[in-house]
Length: 301
Image 1 (cartoon, rainbow, N blue to C red):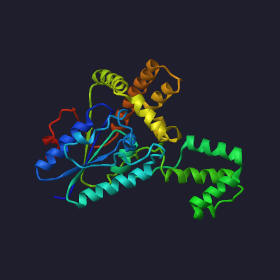
Image 2 (image 1 turned 180 degrees about the horizontal axis):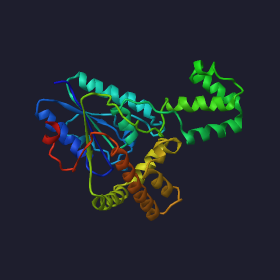
Image 3 (image 1 turned 135 degrees about the horizontal axis):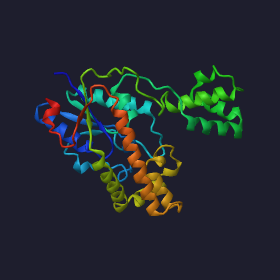
Image 4 (image 1 turned 90 degrees about the vertical axis):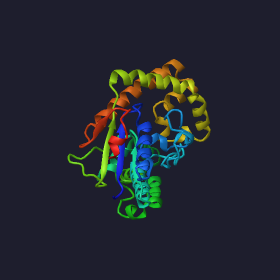
């Protein structure tokens, strides 16, 4: 049988990680070795462990894991980069005769791998930053940057046209991807033999679970983790520093929030994020919703 791609998705805190391990183990027992590929944007970052509930290596049951701890907190997690990295990892896994298990809740990241579509290059925040830089320094400095980073594009842009330069840098910085992308009306699977599994927990059970999880983050030492990450440049990062939990812990450390306010805000944002995740994945055609305790045998047969 040709290798398969499994995608285990769902809201944060629903038990995707445990199910992905069960699926990989069941596949291996059935004579189809399996490896896991991360699809959680914040678990890409080295050192961001407590706030992302990253599974320690000692608890990975000997199953190979990919795309964990591959970025520094000063790096930007661009979807186009991730799409290429994840698909390359999957292709390598399958070339070894194994199945790939993609697991995570970052909807755009999952979609960039599972479905065959491109991202319209647009990012309001990035554009605003570039336009502010244009106002401060004029088009010359930005055009020089564009020449260094993409000479072919620079050759097609008028050096005096600030808006065109900003637009070119915006697209370039995103790797022709954007967090504003959406699923196409009729998404086409990238890999023909893909099994989509959504893990769900009733909301009246999930909300207290998420609230308790945030409290545990603080009890487990997220402030110490953030302090360590600050020394590695967290505040210079464009993506990592905005992560739910990390932004609030950082605000507590700088005196902008009390601990109670930081925890409460993280809980509220986590609940809101979980709702968005469920809404995103509900649009996946052919996705099979299961409880976190689903028998892996029924998913791999």
